[in-house]
Image (cartoon, rainbow, N blue to C red):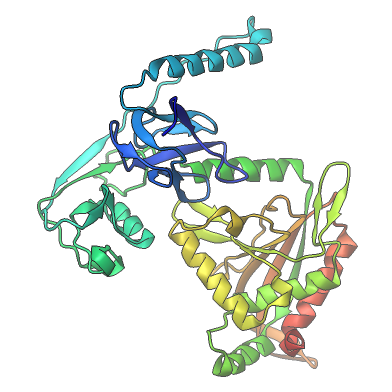
Length: 429
């Protein structure tokens, strides 16, 4: 145990994180904690992560409540001796923070006063449902898989009331699916998630939802990209007849099901190897040309968009790519991604073809110099040997940062990409 109290601050859990939201505290003031214990679950801009204690002692103070946000390096809690006076330490920190803030704003004394920010009142809706059984817990922490926790949260269930059928009473997915609540009181915070409400005839109504950390970061980064990077766009139509045939043959032998998106990823990685000037980043006073190919794959989740990264994509087989992309997509949906899963992209693919979108343009994902927007495969009439015949085509649009990628360079990349998908055997060589 330490000789003096220690302040627990909000850690920077991702490269883009500016603040975090306390999803829930797992301990309360007065509890004994050891180094390695999990104090709270923190919602960042990318995932919900666990806040670990690096101190032994007693939890003396908790700052933010569940659902409240704290900037990086802001005070979360204080750990020390059970009878220790922590208030002096807290006051000293507050005074220091105030002094720093006054220093930053000392030249703005004559400026227009900042408006008072009023936090919106959170409307809570309670419903009567049945309390069934309680899950086994360890030191106050519910034993449950990350997927089960997310499902319970989305459904408004208290996971502590669900009986677990996993190892040592651990709650798993099927337990949440089988749970039949009847009298449990479920509290829904309507400020955090969109819940469709019935609309009375002739009545105007609306619902305002607080912006999540993920959505805040998406808005900031994409706005910066759109308005700081001079975008231009290149669109190409690709005949996918051979790709359809090749995929069918591959899936007859592949240990995992290969999707058209897997073929796109493989073709893009191979094209980047031939056109390294596209696999680049703008760094202000220099351009970085990456020798490695780390492919970002845009994945839609409930609260926005995540871009997990497939590393060394050009060095992996189609079956390896397929398995990894599926695994990363599942982790993204369950908020299990860690910083090593989303950092380091050198090129990004955004595929909306599975949603029926034929063609679109995407905003460049920093620090990449380009992003490839992939539409769906559409059966249409094509000209072959001078004759009009049925064919399957797919449109792709590459958004390029004109500071790095010129029109000719981007066009050459797309030409290679087209050749590979129109003759997929080349992907296997």
